[in-house]
Amino acid sequence: MNISQLEYFLAASRTLNFTQAANQMFTSRQNLSHAIRYLEKELGVRLFAQEGNSLVLTVAGHETARRAQKILDEIVSLKEAFQSDEGKEHQPLKVALGQNSINCAPYDLPSALKDYDWDVSLSEYSCKQCYEAVIEDRADLALIDCMERDFPACESSVILSNRFYLLASKDSALAEQSTIRLVDLSRHRIVLLPDYEFQLRPFIDACLARGVNFRSFDVISNIGFMLMTVRNEDAVGIGSAAFEENTPPGTRLIGISDFKAPMNLYAVHKKSSPNAASARRLISHIQENLHADKIFRTQPAQ
Image (cartoon, rainbow, N blue to C red; front, side):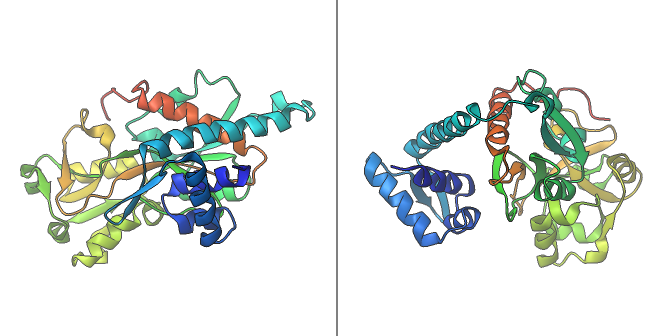
């Protein structure tokens, strides 16, 4: 067992795709596959299983990922222990938050950082700008809400997944239905925020494939304007899982019967960043808080 095997396995455990993992690790798919196979042979367990067309971690795989990450973080920590500490306390971890993650996600990310024992500097951007900040080394870590997508040149992991909804006026005919089909949206204005291409590409593609005309989509500037448009016009907005218990006044949250892609909270950082180990440490802290249901929003939506 060596460090490279653990790194290759962790990349595959995050992406659940050997090709994507190999690209992240700047190696071939064959090399990555061989490394994982040898690791499985040495441990005497299967780390991955196939479920339909999807690759998933086994129970042993989840436990191996948890322990392997601790091992690699300790190795990085050991190296850092013999480096100069000069100025370290004045260099907080730079974290970029997507605007929707702050404004309408079902979790309160800033609160997840209140009891964190390292300094963190938060900046708010659009989702695409968060990714660009990491690429350009202006941020050590980005926390981004969007549907499934790749983040080239970065290491990414899904911290949480939430159901995707539409939001309609309570006086709309759509509000009388518990779920709707994508084709039914062809008769309505669909209100999107400016980052829709980056955040919602699978939803847009699914709508177009079912005959929804691109002219049905209308891009507006902010969430407040989206809610006002949905309440006052025959329009449909993008709903958040934050609204399941506290739906904005005058609106109704509606599921989609023929579209099941979730909204994911991604943690994105550069593997080559000098603060990569610190970024992974913060990701673990946020995961522990979120999954312990400590920081989910309960206040009424505006």
